[in-house]
Image (cartoon, rainbow, N blue to C red; front, side, top):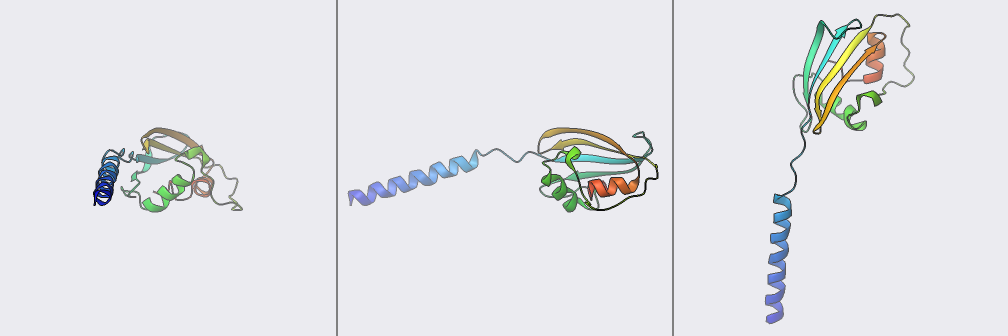
Length: 131
């Protein structure tokens, strides 16, 4: 009987400890970004703008789930986005400049890049800047 009582007390202590650990777990760090696309080598005037949140995917981005997935594959590092292997674009220079400002899993993001044309942007970034 003493052994049963000891086991019961140990089981309750384990449940209480587990509950305390779950209750004190750090909340998920937010992903909230504003993405823009502008024609030319400047960030203005903005032609398209969208908000993007992840976990859950949302915001005004029309392909939020796909954009979050693409960013998750590169750890939120926009410079590492590389889609469309084997896709060829024309060499026509018609620049497009994109920006991403906000937070990726709590980490500050301030990204800007000019692509040679819309095809180059699309094949490199996939759904991320498909606003």
